[in-house]
Length: 288
View 1 (cartoon, helix red, strand yellow):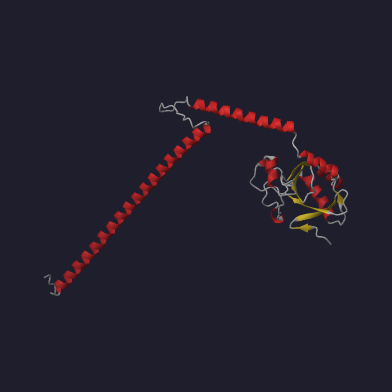
View 2: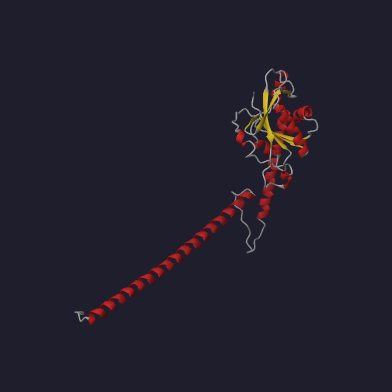
């Protein structure tokens, strides 16, 4: 009997269109890490993590599938991995699929998609009850030897031809896109020059006017130079303070050392005085 669970993931056996073989999808509940935003924590208990999803699976495909196997489990959203269509192969460690993944509802969808491993996706349900219904239905199917139909379109020559055509840019659209990008760049450059001109008219607290060199063409260049100068002055002040602290510490050590030497000499002097007194008493003291 085939295993129904691998490293915390339940195994779902499905059948693809016009295929005699079986495809296996791995699923589990996806928990949101504590300490995130309230909006992200609100998604806790409504997320399902899927792995080894058939290619070309989208929101409509999953919605249709859940309508077949779990009536009432309404989906709210679906984020597939951005690496699924990548030509490079990827190794996936099942033990780290959900533990190292942070899902933020208020983050950019593409940012979340880029964090997902290849052939993975996160399904969001409208509430916790919908997730539980879908999870229980899939778990029940996981223990069944029969496979369910995955509602994909037929991936034949027509599909491949259309897929190939989608990768070819339309000449006019591509030209318009380049023209728009150049226009945006020129506008940003003009705005930068205007801001630079405004900076040359600003008088600081000491009554000095900012002088702009010919090699400084942008506001960022000037601000970068000012920031660098401030950093250099700050580093000089820090080194000077550190050097002063070292000197003060050395003088303190020197005073302590001199004090210890004087105490040692005083102790030896008293010791010699005591020896002289004893020798005088015994009439053995002969200084010459």
